[in-house]
Image 1 (cartoon, rainbow, N blue to C red):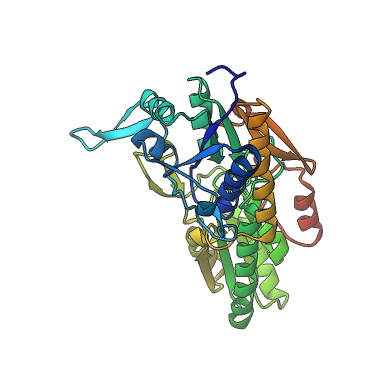
Image 2 (image 1 turned 90 degrees about the horizontal axis):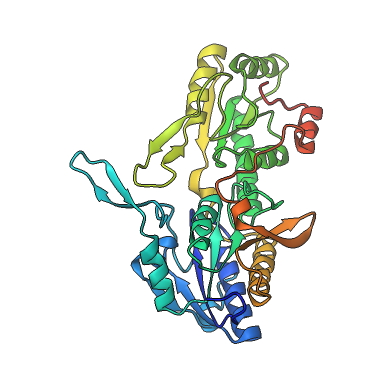
Length: 368
């Protein structure tokens, strides 16, 4: 299809992990496309998996009404389906067999006369989208992830909700920590990036923040816990990212999902730390892993507004003929960047981030 041809029919999919605000984006894309431009809109079920399996259904104005505040995604999602690297079964030894099924995905999109595809997701989804761009599918990306780790956008929807949930958990755990005079460790999501832990730890007043970008010294972590106990402090609160690791050490891997394009699943660092701190300091220590609770439930007002802005902007890009770009927020302004600039990359917390300096100034340590 030529870039000059008018867009008349679009598809929408949500890829990767679920995230608060997905339905708000689906709503914004669908309603903007129908009410302002009279486009046909189709929903692709379960991310790229629906494109591969040809599970594509019409979306109407009524289908997306009353979903603004709903968590999850009405289209479903998958973090195991990449058309360029798709598991088609196992060999006799049980090892996954991968194949490139891009032709099938493209054929299914053509069968439904999709002039363009709106892909809502994180770095993995953008990587899959960038591959489809090379096969002449016209795509607009919308940045989604609670981890806030996509390049070239200052914020992703879902992040604010995750920070809100994590902060509330820290606030609740503080009360039991002070009652029992314990070291309490709260483990948060984020993969290789420490954005959630940094923001929730700062908002919750954590005494120790451990993020992937700063390797920690276990001796210094234990020394802070002991020092606080000796000075009469009732407890120590530790906020740790699932991707944190000690100096010269490795991240704690919860499991490996072989059939996934991104097989490593992190988790469990809080339990490892809990055992180490208790053994070294003789202080009572407990660990709490927040896990998927950070990804569930209703999106905050901030994420609903951001998702609505992103969805509407995506349709504007399509109608302006600006294809193969991802919507982004930079310095408080909506813009867009090439999807290829976002694919296969992660935005980590810079070591000179002002919030790190603010936490240090107010007494927190990062274990370095």
